[in-house]
Length: 275
Image (cartoon, rainbow, N blue to C red):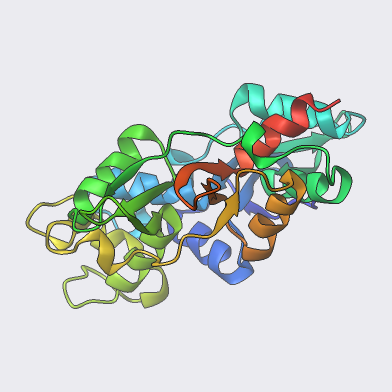
């Protein structure tokens, strides 16, 4: 369990992004009069900004438009119960309550680390990997990738060349980083703080004529897909995820073909029902 890092309910989008960047974290708990009332994540903010069609700058967007409820579990709950609760409700993180207030937070990363430390040589990757993975060709315009991520609510897309060979991966985190950089360009409406001008390039990401239409996925993809093998120890795969600070890895067959993905959500499934 981690101690909560909070932001006030009456904060704005600028405040939240600044806090996320300064503290190098991906989520903040939202506080109102010393009570935790919700949560906001980097992904929540990014998706909101990509879909928002207004001309508001970051300081004009109230955080309350992005906040999501934070569900919690009692501090007496077992780790397996935490995993089950997270899985059943499709949460990436949950609060920990002492019965009167939220005293901490547990994330998928925390549970993946616990699995790594506790269940060595108990399960293999192939038992829990997802055989389906979202993909696109590497010359696909960026706006199509962004739309795919939003519509399918996915965090990563494998990119193939036209010989059907996987050559890279594009994650939502990559898009967020690119948006930060794009926010420094001359067409930005207001770049008083270039480090967090993500909002002002956002319309171009979904535009056929703007940045999203003139930029191909290969231009911002990572050209190396981190992988594990189908028969690898699942705890070892957790260490790959944790050491690389990523949320998903490709899974290779015995002949080296990419046959699926393993995400931290898959690790939670294993932890929820392990004997």
